[in-house]
Amino acid sequence: MIKEFRDFINRGNVVELGVAFVMGASFKSLVDVFTKRLVEPLIGLVLNMPNLENLGLFGDVDPSSGLKSGSLGAFLGETINYLIIAFVMFLVIKAYNHFNELIDDDDEETTASESKEVVLLKEIRDGINNLTKS
Image 1 (tube, rainbow, N blue to C red):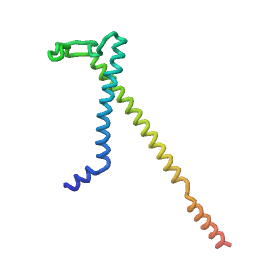
Image 2 (cartoon, one colour):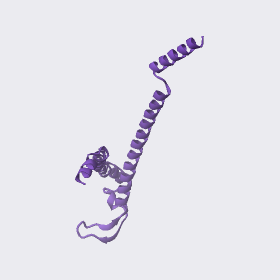
Image 3 (cartoon, rainbow, N blue to C red):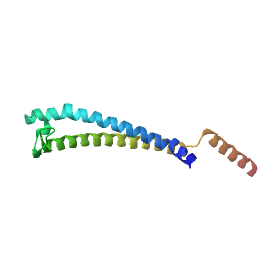
Image 4 (cartoon, rainbow, N blue to C red):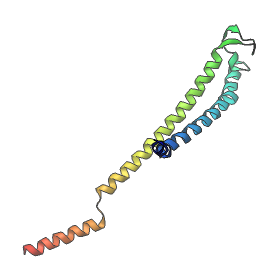
């Protein structure tokens, strides 16, 4: 059982998945900073608000922050985060699929075209067949 577990951990897919998870988490923090420090202040300038989280406040006042517990602006910020991440993932998947199509096309061309040796051997075979028929 320990050997099976070791084989499972050493399998390439698990390692690649772990790397992808770590990179995804760091990418999310990058998008968070982009949204909080660039996008939200720009929207705040347009709406004449210093902080997007103050947009559409409702509910009871939270004693720790002094703000109301509900915020449409906070939801808007997270929606922007989601859309940015979803768009980047769309581009990554699109590039991945395009790359796989190129590889598949190359494989089909390689199997469709015969190597020089195969063509030469067929010519030799045909030549021998012609000699034996004569």
